[in-house]
Image (tube, one colour):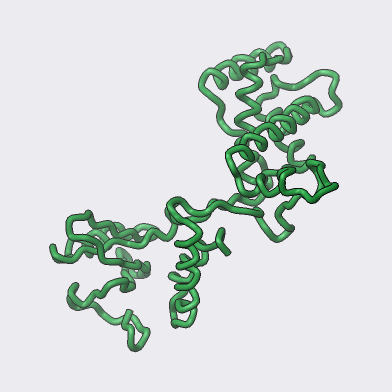
Length: 275
């Protein structure tokens, strides 16, 4: 990308690549070219060279990396690595997928499901197996929301019955009412553990932060709004409020540049928790 004209120019020599340049790799195994953008930053010559492209042009990227001189190596900026992205939760899925349990739990449930299909016998798991099931469901549920609503717990319990019919409960109108209630208590206990560890979204709702006269756990709970996925995200791994503040200041100058959407998006994601 030519810095003066903001246009892509044909590259004739690898020495023309400057620090934090942007390359447009045209990968054309067929008649239709596939364009991929790579953001490069200079690293120490003793380090390894990594150039990532999306979605398939590994060959062209590798040829570019191998063509670099020994005294100057380039590495791609990790736009989507877990270390640089904020800890975002996903929106509630249309169909909740029951996670895989431990091998012993899956083996025992498989046997009981076979017996249920043969004899129609329901299975009442012991405290250990029930705890494993509820722990896995609570951890999966926490990926979407720290404060699940009643219908969300009901959907999770229904998905559990669909995946493992042997866990159905006699005497219940829905067949999973007991699992729904147990899941609510498990989520509350799991939320308490996260609060003791200092999770920001749960800590802000603790009784210590309530006003005088509102000493109730359910009073003024701060939750995500309808347009938000989560309320109080964690900082990216290895980042501090001071470093994110510097990133935010650098972002103010980046938005003034033309054709700088990739860098702006990266800095916006990185500073999301700080902003």
